[in-house]
Length: 464
Ligand SMILES: Cc1ncc(COP(=O)(O)O)c(C=O)c1O
Image 1 (cartoon, rainbow, N blue to C red):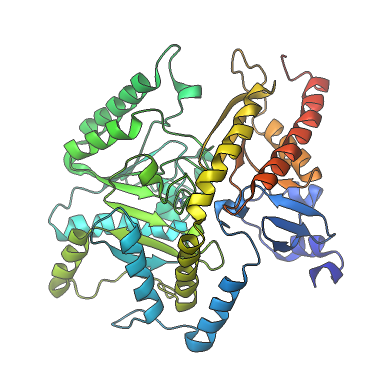
Image 2 (spheres, helix red, strand yellow):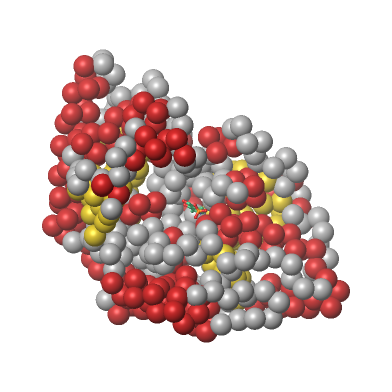
């Protein structure tokens, strides 16, 4: 039991290289040692309970401690703990999972490639886009357009698709081969011109995208990648008509559309996929996180049959398709994913989430009245509040991230885990959350905001 190990936090700092962490700051603040979890709650090693208000990293849709998923993993481990899928081998659980995903996804006759993380899924997307255009004799069609504040992961190619400066700085990203471009963040509240309607703003952004494609040369642009809702970049919802107009531009210039559903997939936006919510017709889709409700690391890339067929046709000349991970199609991960999808369907989890979203969105949007909240935004079971120092002028706080950190800290004190992204606070609870638990979560948040308002007032940071 972790609780019985003394000084675990100090020992972690001595031995673990923590990811995505302010490495100097944690030496002062210490680490939060999560010990166990059940349902939507997790507990630190002092026994304090927290609501996991962001489903860990937007992923534990079925919450914690699910017996069926644990049993499925155990059974599969006993039957076939691992088998490589390289060089002509396959196994039942990856076949059944691919078949199930084919039924669910908005891509007709898809083929599904498995990996281990959202990042490697998007690396696969990049490599497939390049490979496909090579084997179909379009060797110049290689550039991929992401968006500023888009988040697609952290490996070299996925990190290059990502459009957040913090993930580039110091790592020499994006890869400087001229193939990674970024277009506008579609954030109406923050970036539209005064008086510009959502629809006019969307037209302007689609126009900017078209201008970028024309400047670079349409024959050089392979793909555009977008999350239906930008998650880690700040939970930014597309303005009205945005995707309709963007998709028309992509179609006009034969640019394929990669739909990154790593956060939005599996009921998060009130429908099975973000593509359903925003009427998207993607050419390929990336999945991870809620694919297994994070009980196992697993990602999937679904592509159109024509891409798969082009790779098949290229085989005589190219030889084996030389991309794949040791754990591609890991049998335990696939079995757990299959069971996760079965539970989603059997227990009507997406329907439950859609039903709960009324309460969730109501409580979220009520936060828009708080003096520190400039915008409360969300859809389905995802949302965020953007903190401002002055509601009327939408002014941000002088040191970006300080107020957000203060909110996260106050939430922790009140037994709630949220995600602070600069001064935006994200919510994305497990989809199994009940109506009473939604109230419990926002009651804790309201309490935290009382102390943060006190702090901001004391520091002279807020104009109320
Ligand atoms: C939309 C999106 N794509 C890709 C990724 C990368 O996934 P991973 O961290 O599993 O590599 C993330 C992670 O948060 C994500 O939100």
